Image (cartoon, rainbow over all chains, first blue to last red):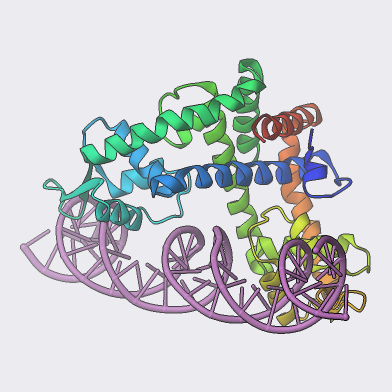
Length: 153
Length: 153
DNA sequence: TTGTAATTAATGTATAAACATTTAATTTTG
DNA sequence: CAAAATTAAATGTTTATACATTAATTACAA
């Protein structure tokens, strides 16, 4: 198995914390790259997919651009422009909110739902490969990640 | 504690694999953002810092741009341009390799070593916060991350 | 040897990210 | 109520990323 040491050709780490930090960044990049490559044939990026996923999760209900931002993995990216891209692809619709005219209600269109469902099928396969890690290990991993973030913030 | 569910306001996940994937990306972003912010006052980016760290690890020995790429966390970013930035800041020197004139030998300059050591001191503090997770947990986390990547590739 | 392939680094280019700023609307406060 | 502060979304701008392409050199094979 390729340990993080092999992956970046670094024989040793100062301590276990440093190793964990680097390992987390590396593994995060690893997944993002795999998923990016995976998404490409479908003509959307991971970020756009995530916005679509959030909208799909609303089950028809509208959601503002701000709320999308709050639910995004990467808070720094510009939800407004991502919605713009999806709008250009006719995957979502955008309607000014009546209650608060500063806000914009975003809905997923049938074409968007269709695309996301199509992608999800394949994505599940991709993720099943990961199942080899085993349910118990995955639970442990999730717990450690949550703890990890808690220990910093 | 903020679990991944709270962080991205998603009440449930389809399965533990999906949760792990999202949790890993989120935690990776989390660390990168913290470290970016941390680096800012020193006038270099994380990517540039990583290249410097690789050069410092060479202990005076030269290393080619290609070798730098191999050791980088994010293989996709352009080592050539990163070295360029560090060169402009007079932190590294660049000499055409004599044995292979396609290659370029990159060395770290004293100013570069000084900067990286200055940063490392502070970075250690940042990482000590993580120690709260505990040595055993960190080891377990590192092992799970290595296994995780292995299960995909 | 001599042409072909492969390798190394640099550069070109289109898109995206990371901010800051702006505009419009709403809320709060004096 | 009016002015100031806050909020939501869009836009501007600079830098970085993700690739593809190029240019120079080296390795290899007929």
